[in-house]
Image (cartoon, rainbow, N blue to C red; front, side):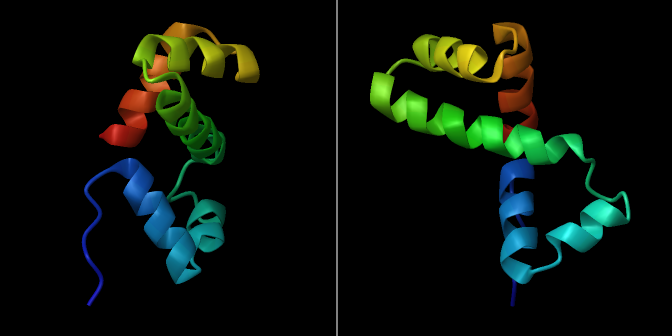
Amino acid sequence: MVETPQTTYEAIKQAEALGNFKDLLRLGIIPPAFVTYKLIFEFYLIQEKETKTKAQAETNTAEEFKQSERNIRYIIKKMRD
């Protein structure tokens, strides 16, 4: 039995593990932006561990992906919802 994902990020990871992520993307069930959101969120998680502060992790992620910190916070919230 497959566990129900609790966050958007977990749902994406589960779809990848089950091998149907690309199909869901192609069918429009998963928005194309979520591919980028996933990359940004994973980079942020690494930065959060390395810097030990959320603010610095947000700044580093914003600089890496050439996004505003506000947009990074939006993506983080979206992936944690």
